[in-house]
Image (cartoon, rainbow, N blue to C red):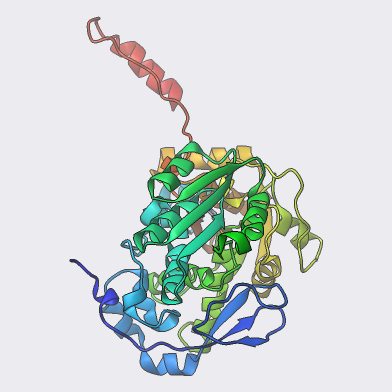
Length: 420
Ligand SMILES: *Cc1c(COP(=O)(O)O)cnc(C)c1O
């Protein structure tokens, strides 16, 4: 059996306690927790001094390239409990054509589509399943727009958990089938992800399942924060000026901001990036709250966008997203579905990068921010491509050639020119 050294070698761990993100109340580590008593997400806290003594950058650099190399930064106590499907360190790809077109210094895409189940949900859910495994959970349920459900199906099934998944009825077919094929029990629900969440909450007593909804358990944030660790390490601990993040439930933006603060406290980074929350115009509760100067967002009515992963009308961690955006000197902005589709096509056709619509929203958001003067062309920016474009419907390509007839190459060349 093959195992990365990160999955066999025990390393010291440094979790001191959990903390309510709203009240600061302490909760014991190494116990199963959902939300805090105040009904807010719990955050994992570490002995950062101990960490700074136990690990340094060169030691980290010697470890195999997967998210478990950051063990000292993570909550899992024993390697035995880690559930892994080969979480590669995802590559950073520059959008050279787009840089040229805009006259921008550096546009980098952190391409998270390379992860198991082809989205960055693998990081958060892999960590959450690892912790649920460590804490003895055997049945889990999740509301999802697709990718979180697929990741939970994969990681949960792998470790023998019973997995229940509820998704909006218009979730892309490929996601629903992927979830079923990976061994979960899946239902389409005639509503949005928040309606699916209500079903999970309502079934808790009778079904005795553990609620895996975004931020309703403490560990997805810890998995998602490895995006920030990886990015920092890949850029030689010199973070970019601005990060554009496709924001749904906000786990990733909250997780990255959390770990940037941990790294700063440990003296590992000198400066932190501005964090930009990108949403779709058809579902932009965080952007509205940001513009209105509010700390919490109102639920968004009639949410609708092609970017299914960020169609989250109401996020329980809204105040944490808004805090990350404001504390970092960033901002929140929304883009139209037309702009998302346009960005997706240019990234694919010109730069060879197949972005999901959510990932493309960050490119559209960046272009808008440049146009509005909210970022400068010489800012070093990182966009997150959170999922693989292949998981979404693509434009048709249905031209044919009849090999029994003479081929009209002049017409072929003319058609190719028209398509340019
Ligand atoms: C879940 C998801 C998002 C949103 O991520 P959060 O960290 O929950 O805000 C964006 N894009 C895709 C493809 C997703 O699956």
